[in-house]
Amino acid sequence: MVVANFPLYRRFVGRTPAQIMSGRRIMPPLTPARDLIDIIQEARPEDAIMLSEEFAVKGVKAHRFKRHGDVLRITPETSAHEAIASSLNPIRAIPEAFGKNDSVHRGYGWIGRGRSLRVVPLLYAVEGAELAVLEKNNIEVKRYNKRLTATVPSRSEKEMHTVILGGVPFQELGERIFAEWVHLRSRSTVEAQQWYGDLAQDRANDELLFTPQDIAAYHTAVARFPQDARPAINPFVIPTPGLASYVEKLRNNVVVLYKKENGEREKRNLNGTEKELLIWERTLYHPDTFAVDNTQYTLEHADYLVKTEA
Image 1 (cartoon, rainbow, N blue to C red):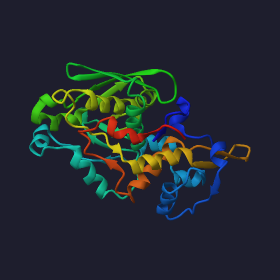
Image 2 (image 1 turned 180 degrees about the vertical axis):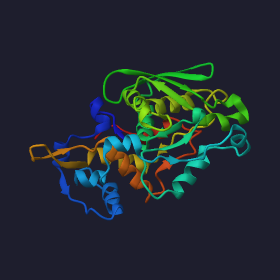
Image 3 (image 1 turned 180 degrees about the horizontal axis):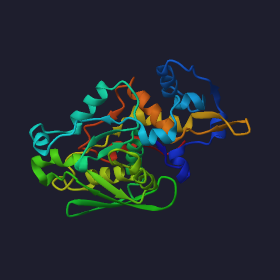
Image 4 (image 1 turned 90 degrees about the horizontal axis):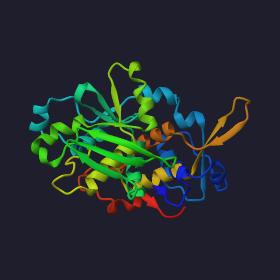
C-alpha cells in the first residue's frame, strides 16, 4: 500500500527514520519470528518498531541473496503437450506451492523457454500491483503481434521505462495458453533488470527477473484490453488488503539500527532484501497473503493498494 500524497520517491520507501522514531518505540523480541510478524501486522500509525541489522536479515548477505537465494518453483519443468493436457495454470500452482512451503526465498518462479528460470520477487509483485493502481493514468500498453509494449513510470524518479513482454498467453491461443504462459519474458530499461542481466555469468542457468514495471504493465493489459484480446492467464500474484497493510507498515513503522564504520549507531529504512525476507516470513503464518485468481483483475477493485493520506 502506497501513500499517494507522499513525494514520488518516498511512496515506495515510506517515512524517514526520523519521522518513524518520533512515535512510540517498540523493541520486539528476536524470537520466534511469528511474534515479530504479528507485532508489525498490528502496529499502529504512531508505533516505531526497531530492529537490529543482524536480526533484520538473519545473517543473509543482501547481494548474495539476490544472486544465489533459493527460488520457490511453482511448477516443474514441463513440455507443451503436458502443460496443455493438465491445463497448467498458476491459479492452482501458486497456492499449492505456497501451501507446501516452509522457508523464505528470493522469489517464486518457473522454468520457461530456453530452460531459463523466471523469477518474481514478492516485493516486486506488491510494488507492481501498486504501480498499476497508483500510475494507472500514466501507463501505456499496446499490443504488437504477439508482444506487449509499454511505458511505465519509475518508482523513484520522474522518468518512464520501456517494457516489452513476449510469450504472452493471449485469449485467442485457446488451450495453448497453458503452454505459452510459462514462456513469458521481458526486456526493459529498468535498472534492476539491467543489473540482474549482468549476473548471468555467475549462474549455471540464465534467469529472467520480472520487475515492478513489467508486472504493472501486465496487470494493466489484463485490466484494459477487451475480453477476447487480453492475456488469459496472469502469473503475478496480487497482494490482499492484509498484505498491503503489512507492507505499508514495513515502510512506515520499521527502522533498522546499524553500526557505521566509525562505530556510531545509525538508523535507516528497511532495504529491499529485508522487506523480501519479512514478506516471505508472513506467508508462512498468514494464509491471506495473495489473491491468485487474478484473471479478473481490475484497477478499480484494487484501490485499497493506495492510500490518499499518511
